[in-house]
Image (cartoon, rainbow, N blue to C red; front, top):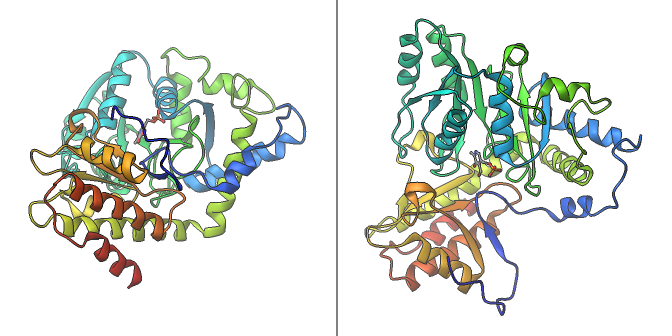
Length: 396
Ligand code: PLP
């Protein structure tokens, strides 16, 4: 991606990355306000609205801690608040982000066991159950799952993982990364028996990057009281001493709260069911286009398991000998469309279409049309008529 976007490109920059995502104008307007003392009484109702709103979006009545930091901060906060040095976690492999979360845990002196899985197909639930049943001494303290693997466009159903943990009668905590699923895919923390949920501001919540959080069950909070990994800025108990906010050991990011409050308002105006249905519809349109392109030995859906395809991001596997980054470069420099690249070992082999957040059918069609043109420009074999298939689906 060496060459910069030509300065002469006009029109709106089409942003089709799987996070950060498009920020709605009303959120930009909400953030664009003079600052306030975070101890000002006028700020507290906004602060409380956001906490209550995020809890509704996550589907929990329990604890919520927020941090100024991206998703990695919330990963780190969650691990350090729940674990002690030398303890073991079970990471369910899904792709780049499950690997990264495991690496972070290892860097903190946590033992990491992995339930291996094919990145294109996703984990088989019996493998999780077997790994937990084999752990007779209950050494494993937490099972970590990325609900929506942004790198591969693969979704792992948390309710099924919960069922596997229960079937094994294992007491491990259940930790879920919802960074690219929250406010896009159905998510119900309490109903699904999740102990800690990690989320971020820059995807389904349609805000700038830089805010993240952990929602914690009572069981999770009890585990926190015994957990001994080093932490201070992220320490939930320290946070609770910081009255009146009970989160944020340092300065509270006022303007981020304006933006998040507007996000919750937008989501609830549409209705969470409507949000989920819209994401499904847009994702399905994208998949219809790719199904057509896949003809003639063209690009294919990376996820080969129809039950696990993600409704917020689609990874597309390029045909042998064709560079995904060259295609992305054409999309960006010629059509002003930004696509996600392949991460880790998928770099150059995969491009990713983000379809989460503030998005509608014409935006998706514009992106698909730019990709179809870039396929032609780059001489990538493909079936013709992908955009037409998406249009037919959207019009149906
Ligand atoms: N987890 C998932 C599923 C992600 O998609 C990302 C980022 O894209 C992260 C974790 C890391 O979050 P951040 O980049 O905000 O630190």
